[in-house]
Structures are given as structure tokens and as C-alpha cells.
Length: 149
Image (cartoon, rainbow, N blue to C red):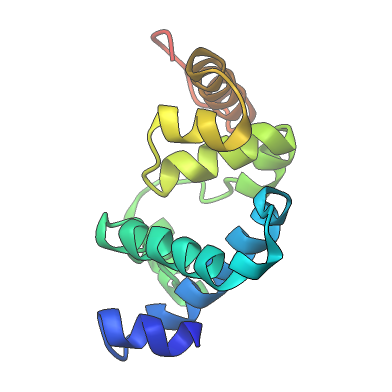
């Protein structure tokens, strides 16, 4: 049902499966908000509409750029002293789960107010989490922070 609905809205695109999966995740997280089980289909369709809106707002653009090991070695040869050894996973592992979630939502284009609503936080608390997380990442990656971010 969901897949056909998304195909009818955006056509046969690679993002359809992602939209279906994200809709199901949204539903799973929101099940406590479903007060009348007889309204499940409407609840599902509302989640699908929200995912479609996110898609059209540009939150489903390709953010992942895969490169092979040979591309990395060519890059490191082209840039003297590049030091390709940036351990992003280790740096992200230093952050709390909440901070990683907030940064991920920002990367997908969510506004501070939207993040605050979805995580039941104030907008100021979300901004502070972003500020602290970015500071911690800069420190972990050995970059000079400069400024106040």
C-alpha cells in the first residue's frame, strides 16, 4: 500500500524504498500517539504525507558520496601532507546519542524548531547541543576551532 502510494506521487525512483522505510520508522516511533486503533490507516497515510513533504523539501537528496580506495590515494598524492587519516567514526563516538541525532537531523535539513518538537526539547537546548557537539568534533579531529561555534 505505502510503496504504491509513493510511486503514484513521485514515480519509480530509487527514493521510494527509503520513503517507505522512513514512514514505517516514523509510525513505529509514533504508535503511542495513536489513540484510536480504528484510525490506523489514516495515521499511516498522515505519516506518508509527512515523508513526502520532507522529500519535496529536499531532505532526501543524495548526501553520501562513495569513493574507492584508489580515489583516496590519488587525492592524498595530489595534496601534499593531506593526512587523510580523519577518524570521523571515533569522533562521532565521543558524542552522546542525542547530540548525534540532532546533528543528523540538521544535516538532513530539519530546522531547530522541528528538531526541538520531535525530541521534546526547547529550541535553545537544541542549539546548545549543536554548538557543543561541533566544538567536541573539532577538538577530536584536531582542527583549530577559532570563533565561537
